Image (cartoon, rainbow, N blue to C red; front, side, top):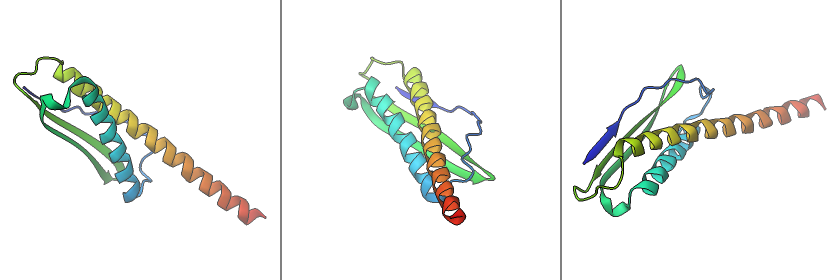
Amino acid sequence: MSGRKDETEVEDIGASYLSEDQMILVSQAAEAAARKVIFRHIPRRAILDLNIMVEAVREGLVTFNIDINIVLSPFYKGADLDGVIREAVNEAYEAIRKRVRELRKHDRCKVKRFHSKEKS
């Protein structure tokens, strides 16, 4: 049994300012969130192959694409694979939103401190 979920969702979360390092951090957070959901629903021993790809593409805006492929043992009958993948993709996107908000908040604090030093 295998599953693949491709969904297209476009949402502006203010990620256009992200540096390459920040895009990597955000992508890693998304992958970890998806992996956590998958292993919460499916035992590791039932997964023959798992590939989670989070790609960040900058073309004006930063776009995050999430692709999850899971191949299960033919003997495993325990989970709704499409439902697990859907939940994993949703959690990955939520992790992206959360991490971008944290980075934006952190950057705003740096800017505010910088400007307050100039005024002194």
